Image (cartoon, rainbow, N blue to C red):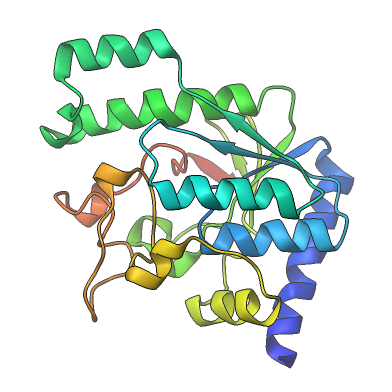
Length: 232
């Protein structure tokens, strides 16, 4: 537990310094395993960070169940943002409800409507946002820093768990009895929208269940674009 406690202490320090230097700060909570670690840390240590989640309209039932659990268990309230209805209707009218399978561009357009645009509304008035992304999750995250300036959203972006391993994430969840998405028990290490997420088999990359019909280089939804510069 000593090494894990060191990781926790580091995360608390990063979050506390972020509030000190960039308040108001918001945490984009995807309700994945990493984000449940951050949910618990922020709430347990009374760190003044707002918390929100994006309801894309295509989430698995297990994610909605966890969303309700978070609302009931934690004092730090979870605010939910939804996509623009007219944009969704226009997309579906032109491309169909599952048009995102047809091309990378159509998939990214769907992600923009359901995730990126609501994210920008959620971040209005903030000076920094927090995510639970980790370096080992994907090749697209290899060059990230713990604290960067996010040029797309024009604010600081902070990744307190960047250097955590998957084992450390699960050690924390189990040690602190943190609720998590039950799909993780069914071999879903990374969970997004239901039609874009599948279970993986032993030996597969942990992100291989996301947008599995695409190449690894395209597997981002636009929330974590790499147009960032290292701070200080």
